[in-house]
Image (tube, rainbow, N blue to C red; front, side, top):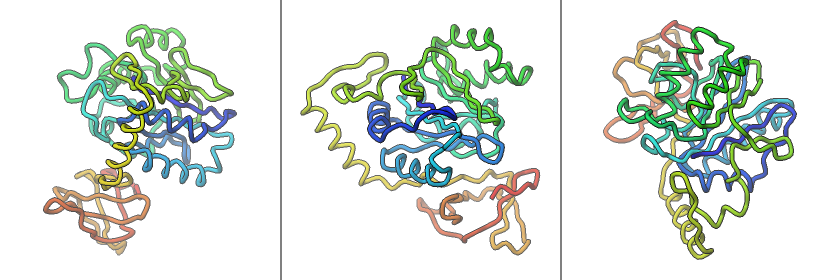
Length: 296
């Protein structure tokens, strides 16, 4: 089912409790999208509450609490596809599997998140239902009519076909909504799982089962224990084999090729995955895409 939390430019920020409720009952991974330097940034794959909230606080500091600026957050319940970072939302509107599964994108013209289950999608392609629907249905519309989200009939058509709710963010920092959202003091929610009383319930596919407080305490305790055992690499970006890298910033550039290189865009460190572990290669490398445009 999932939940979308969308702050429009004039809207308020969610409380910590609203975010925690959203995560606890839609706990298969979270992500963000917002506009930076004239493009949509997609930043996702936060699989624990602690990693999500830590990054959220960093974003608030970096972007001055998103004053007069949009912010979209998505919290996933996995109903199609594995519960892995690559299947969390948001997504670019594209038919490229690599980009649909990318955990960090910075130069997108548009981003999208989904709340619902799309029947007939996500069963045979290796993508989840949202990714496949974007690739096969929304992207062809977008490729011919890039402002489709401003057309009420097209937006209504997507709502009818999917029986779902969607939020779109364009690079002009404008939000567009498909389906009925809850406007709670100028903050938009795709459903009411952000509210406190859902702490006594657990989502299961398309309904909520209710348990007593003892169940909740045991469930929460297990979640906290699991978080302590997991070592997260939430800020790591897997470099594309077609990209280029200057390891030491001295102009000596090479193609990534078959090396499994990961760039930590928070610490600016480069790692290589070898023999089942991450090995530090260098700090502050220069990374270029296949068009030889600098990424970091």
